[in-house]
Length: 66
Image 1 (cartoon, rainbow, N blue to C red):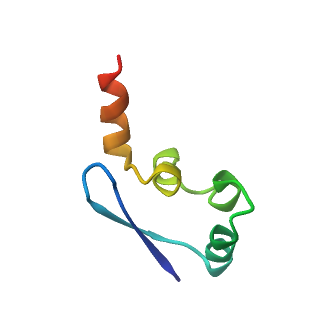
Image 2: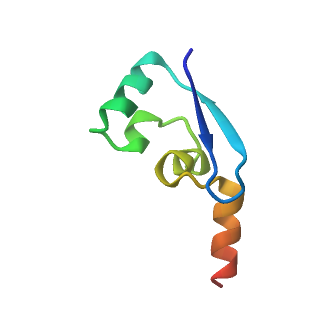
């Protein structure tokens, strides 16, 4: 199963995700929404693919705004 490594742009921690060959192809094509490609992933995991910010850092950012 292919793995995708994403490094958080805030904390620099590397996160590794396993995806199917089909999911990898759809991610590379870029013509579908992330929620349609990775429906089994948590919202925080999907956010890593979108913004390159991990769930922990994402939560800290929004805590600071309130």
